[in-house]
Length: 202
Image (cartoon, rainbow, N blue to C red; front, side, top):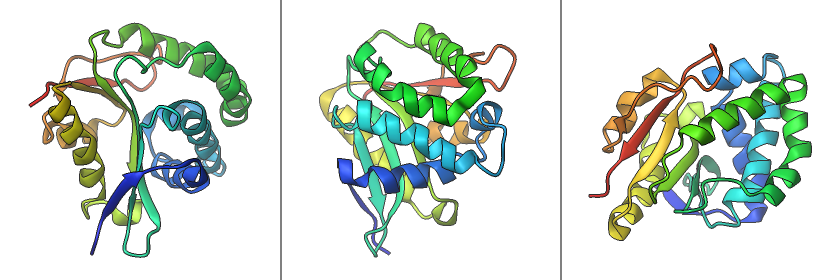
């Protein structure tokens, strides 16, 4: 089985967003924000499509993992050093999609994003905003290939990396790649917690 990791293009957005929507449909944070099981994957894909189109892809920070049939089965959204914070114009372009995704819980999502921003490290780093694979390919190396691709670049550039894990079961997975938990973040004001993780360059 061959695994190909490549840079994503604008034409990949519908498929990579669909994949991430499915991948995050059982995520505690997404379940808290989007309560309806029947529409969660579709609405989550709207969120990730907007983030990819208006922030991550223009910065060159999106990679996809493809299988032997050249189908996208995983994706990672990274922001390069100095660009983890979404600027005002990009935020405004995302807003209609965020409203479709979160509906009446949009204010909660906005407050959560603000708390995450306040806790975000200011030191120069690569920021892994999102990574996910289809459930059917988990354990086959696609997530590892996505992580290794960008972490190799981090090491080559002598830069650290940062993420927030929304699943406690994923913390040990990221630790295998050198990430260390720096605390617990209550970005939801009593809802599901986040585990900020930092990885020094190697």
